[in-house]
Length: 291
Image (tube, rainbow, N blue to C red; front, side):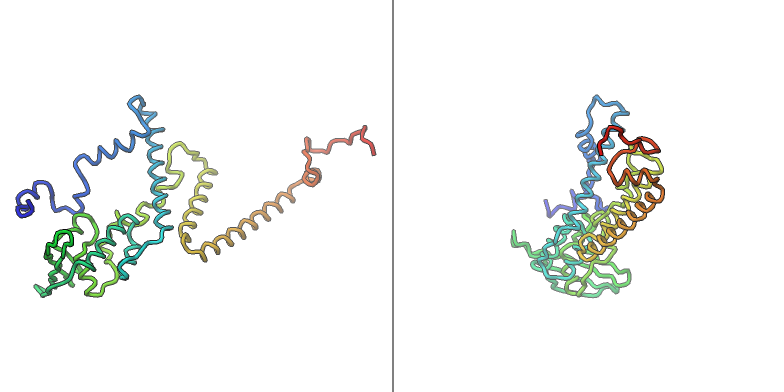
């Protein structure tokens, strides 16, 4: 079957970037799987939109926030000792980083260049790949074009999946390239791929849209973004805590001074004695009270 792959592969696959990730039924099946948890056949359109649909979106937002937190909080394990592996940890999500790390390791342990030649101004590397499972030696061609600043491999893993293959990493190691070019980093596999506005409260259904509520939500969003910016840096987090304490003390002092300036004599006395003032004037003393 592999020897006659030119006969049957074109019938099932087209050379479209990352096309192997999408199937004909992926969209409808994924939608049904997502919404059937919070909905049923008995829901009306209004119930579905304002209850089931909103609950599903909230669940997706929550999972995304958990994934972002784990990506920032998790310490990656580096196995190759190469600088390009550490650069990948900064670019990709934890799940994709594991897959890219496999390619880097296999490019280091199982791949080596057996020839290089220059054709039409491009360097063509012949990379030999030793498959340990079957003891089969395969050869792949990696073309480096310095004019267009492109690197392609005959295995087409970059086109199919969206991250570089072990053969290109083998060539990168030989050419001492320590970082992945930006053009080969697909945002789909990156960290924090969703914009921050997706998680803002005002973009959700059934929330208070009054000016006071919107201002409060904006304040919460600003605090969340500032917290994400310093996450993982202990010195920056401690400095942020001190600033928050200073701002809080300043606000409390301002509000306390404003309350004292606006308070009447009876309200000040009530605050000191811990009693409740029923009217604007203090209540008469109790005639039956004993000295």
